[in-house]
Image (cartoon, helix red, strand yellow):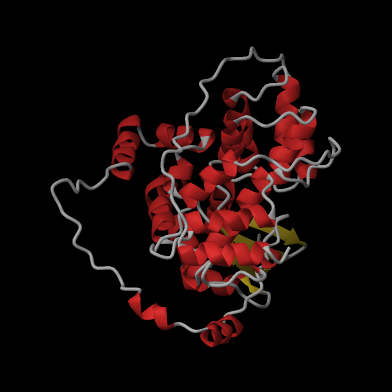
Amino acid sequence: MLGKDLYKAEVNAELSAERLRSLVFFYGPLIGNDALAMYEYLVLRGNTVTFTEINGLLITLNLSIDDFEFYCLKLNEYRLLKTLRQENRYIFIFNNPMDMKQFIRDDILVRDFILKTSGDHYRELIADIYTESDHSGFEDVSQTLSLDSLKNWKAEDETILKKSVENTYEFNTLFDVNVFLKDISTNLLPMRFRTKENLRQIALLADLYNISYDKMRTFLPRVARLDSSEFDLKELRYLCMRAKSDYKPVGNDNYNVPCTNFLMSLQDGKEVTEYDKKIIFNLSNKYHLDPPVINVLLAHALKACDNRLIENYLYPIASDLHRNDIKTAKDALERLSGSYNGNKRKVQEDKLPVYDDSDNKTMSALQEEELLKLMGKK
C-alpha cells in the first residue's frame, strides 16, 4: 500500500451506545487504541463518493503509511473492516462490532480476549454487563397516556391517516410484510407498533416457523394490544413456536423455504417438536443465521447425529458460520462440505422446554371486530 494509492470508504456500521461500549471494552484491547481511534474516526466520517489519495487521509490522521496499513490489518482480523483491492485502488468497508452479549458468545473472540488481557479482567466486565438495577421497594408511579380522547376517532380520520403513512417495506425474507399489512387498520395494528424492527421480527418469525399471513394476523390482538404501549415480541415468539405448521413438501435441496417446513420435509412430514423449534430460534437469534443457512445446517446435523438435532453439535458450527459471515445456502454448503464430517456424535437426551400457557391474554372488542371483518374478506 502506498500513499499515492486511491481509496473510497463505505460505512455499514452504526455505533449505538451498546456497540460503542463493546468496541471500547472488548475490541480495544485486541486491536489497540490507535487502530480503535482510526476506526471511530472513519466510521463517523461516513461514506466517501469518489476515490481519493490515501495521502490526504494520512495527513488528517497524522499516520505513516506503514502504521495505517498495520491498523487496517488489525481491523481486518476482527472483521471491523473489509478491504477490497483493484490494482492501486482500495475500497474500505467498515462493519459493525458485535455488541457485548454477542461478543462473549463467540468461541474464538472470547478466548482471544482472555489470552490478551486476563481472566480476572474478563470476569469483571461480565459482572458489569449482567448487573441489574435493584428496584425492590420502589413503587411504579409512572403516568400513562389516556386513550379516552381516541373514542372520537372517525372513519374519515382513519382514511386520512392511512394515506399519509403508507410505506413499502423491503426485507430479505420470504414473508412479504407489504402483503401482510394490506387491509390491516390501525385498530388491529396501531401505527406506534409498525416500526421497522417490529415488522422485520414478524417477517423473520414467519420464515422460521412457516406462519401464513392470515395466521399471523390472528396473533396481532395478543401482541399489539390497544391498552399497551409495547409490542410484545416475547408473546409473538411463543405463539409462533406453538403454532401448527402448514406443511407443504419441498425438495431436500430447496433451502429457500421456512425452516420448520424444511425440517418436516427432511422428516417425512413429522411435526417439528418444541425442542427443535427452540433450536431454530437460537440459530437465528443468537447466531444471526438467515433461514436458508439454518436449513443447510439442519440437514447437515441430521445426517451427522442419527437424525436428531443436538445443541452441542449445532452451536459451534453455527458460531463458525456466523463468524465467517455466511449468508447464502450456497456458501453454507461450501463451508460445510469439507468440515465437521467426523464420526457421528452420540445422541444425548436433552430436557424439553416447558412453556407456560396460563397467560390467556384476550383481544379487545374493537380488535376482535376488526379481525373478523378482515377474515370475512377472504
